[in-house]
Length: 344
Image (cartoon, rainbow, N blue to C red; front, side):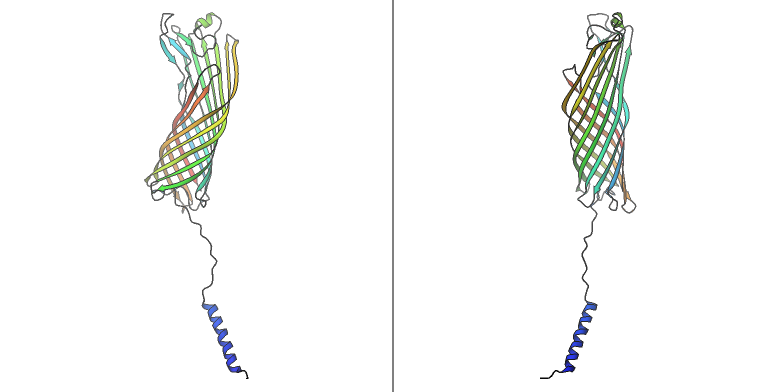
């Protein structure tokens, strides 16, 4: 049987034409590339948000602290106005606590495409002092901090000068949660290290101290603490609209550290009391803040600025430890905070 070359050539021609036609008009296969999606802004709908969608996720913070500290049990004398030597009638004198400025700085990174987890490093520094001095030749001042002459001798003048140096460094890992259109929060945990250094210098002079060549009676007490431990907290935002919100934050830390206590008393140039004590202790720090905040993003969602102001309260239970006192006493710090945040 012979081959029909005419039909064969015609068939091959039709097959080649159909292949070329199909290749030219059939849709081409495309490689799938997953697209990154920006997370919803933390103040979704009621503000511009504080996670810039097109930024690098880095943010810095700076706070101006205007705080007042108060340490319990720093009363240093009793002013006795009674002419009767067997009657103690008067008022207890303590240092006057005022407001001083401090600073707080931080830097963080928001993992926008990792469920908005963030890391944050924050440093707080605050120094303050409190003092008082009283003198009256017609009054008797009874020493309250003298280890040798309390209840034995009296003076006509007394003074106290207390100093506090607070430094804290926090390392946090946090996660932001958009609970509803007008409410979101950030939970976090991490580590905190703290230095809480206190010193009280007291002086008594005149009166029967001078008669017995014991004037001036000078007392110095150092109460220093350093420790490190765990930190956990919750920051909340309650939206009001137009980028304005109310914030309420709380965190607490449990710190294991060591105290260094030193006490010295000299009277008339002679040392009568000198004691050093070092011991380990577990301490807690609680921080509560309330205030108002404003946020905005700009430049095509590349940058963010946040401003806030409010009241902050820090509580250090049993922070004042004295080697000669049976009890320990609380340290409290409170005051205004003005904060700024910039994301890029």
